[in-house]
Image 1 (spheres, rainbow, N blue to C red):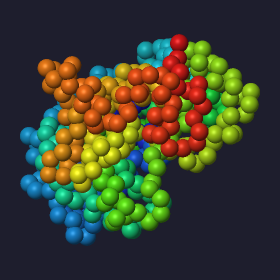
Image 2: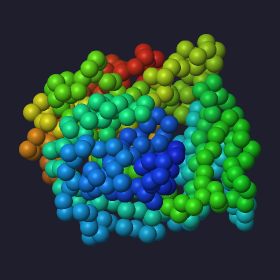
Image 3: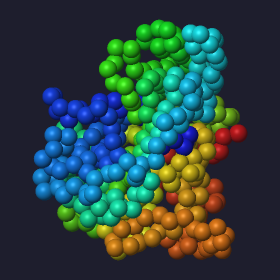
Amino acid sequence: MQMLGHGTPLWRPIGNVYISNTTSKPSIEIGDVGIIANDGTFYYRFNIFQPPSSDLQRSCPPDMIPLQPPLQPAEVITKPNHLPPGTLLTTMGIEATQISASPLQIKFVVKGREGAALVLPNGTSREDLADPSRIRAYVRMHLLKWYRFMNRSRIGRISVPNGSLYLVTGYDKADAWAIACGPLSYSRTGTDMSIRYQADKTPVWQDFRGMTGNSNTPSDTVQSWAVFLRGMKLAVSNSDWVRYILHEDIPELPFYNVMKTPVLGRRARLQTYIEHRYNFPAKYLSESTHLLFNPLEIILRYMIQESPNADVAIVDDWVWCAVADRSDGSLSRVAHLLLRILETHEIVIQDGLATLKPFSPTQSKELSVQSFRQITVGLSRFRRRSNIKRKLDKIFPGPPVPQEQFEDSD
């Protein structure tokens, strides 16, 4: 659902944020820092506006200095009725058919290799930080300390590779939600998959066929759930990472294997046949290929590589939201959107902080290609399909990528 442009989707929407066995806070907030793990959960660590002694700080450096002044209501843009009641959000390849209006019943059928659906019976509200500039300056001063602390403490089972820390600057919240996705297992890719939403049933998801579902329940005491997050992905320079944190190898970007083929079209059908005929699912399955993928991490890597004088690189979810086109999220589509971002933005370094700045309308036509070549050596080769595989193999570390996944679907 990242291709829908609402921000980072959560398989497990955030209600109460548990700090310890006895302490929790009612919901996620602007300024929360954490990690989005491979199970689709946001693992909260601390809030930049709270002192380290606060009960709301689950795990932060003991010498942490909170950002002052505290967040003010005037700094937040609020839309109480952002998405209307009865909103259905579906990815490409999902067919939704309403069976009845009262009680609401909807059948979802996956027409491609994969798909997801989100039902929002009462719609959503939206909150976003109006101006993140003071947060960016604060992050530049403290980010290295955060990474050093988290990698030394080895909290739980979560690794904290460079670029994985996420600082929340906005969210969409709902008081009722239901999300479904398929295939339930990789071996079901390309097979018949469906699920039915029925509002008057508990659970609301019925008639599972190759799919799985998740939802809140009437017994939940939580009144507000974050279904989409928007925020900043944060990375320190390669030199600082190696000098202060690195113990073994530089952590690789998560590689998401289901991106390898378009969801719909002849290319998708052919790849599905090949996989089932030659048992590719068993060959490709491994822990390293089941990590969540975020395209912002690729942007971060390029910013770091092309900005050796920067100490910190920050990229906002809004950069991706602005180009998300509801496509299938295959590698070829992601590469195209990354190319569009880098063609229309320049890397700006100020006081050791690297950020992306869009070209002005008058500059974009004459400067975008020239600047793009200056800040991304060889990246213009993305324009030629024959070079996409080589370039994306470099961006997406992981198992060898089949050539056919770089072809566009019909």
